Image 1 (cartoon, rainbow, N blue to C red):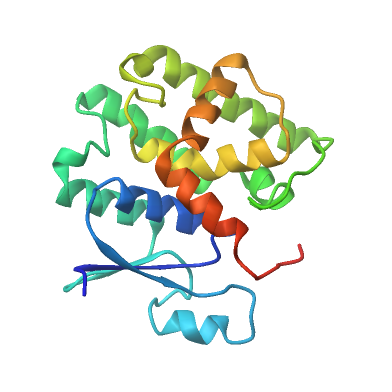
Image 2 (cartoon, rainbow, N blue to C red):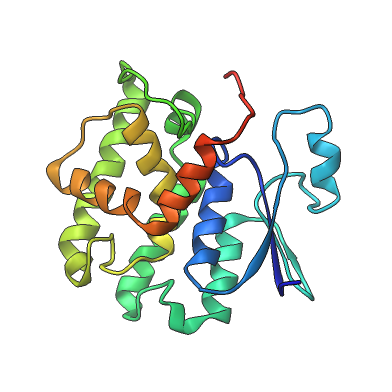
Length: 214
């Protein structure tokens, strides 16, 4: 049995699960995975056996139960400093935390109007004012981070960090809904989608039997 157990939802739909899973995968640590199918009659009861909020992801250790994706990522960054989950430079790290927190707490229109569905491709939506503004803001974040901090690699802060974990589901959404973005952001999206971890998650998502009708 591994030291860590990560409780997640459907890989096709659960964007928050993807965030926690990517952070844990990038530590290189072994972990057990418990997948609970969402939107089923028994889902809430099953989740409450793991988490006080009945939400995913949940990281279980020998001593703790951590039930928020950003808290999980912060915990893993502390436990595995050599994994580089945050940039080393304090100023860069502050910006990485800022954009991660912005993703964690914002972009309601993207979440509600463009649910993550890695199995399917959709026509680009006709964005209302709120969705259009959020798409532009995300594109601006990606361009700004790549220009200011991305010299060391293809990701927002060069190497893969928690900021990329937080935005990876958005990359999946933008790809699936065929959102038009800047050239810089398009190159960034390709880099994220090509990571072995993202490929592994997406292939698993495509093989899942569950369908949630939004």
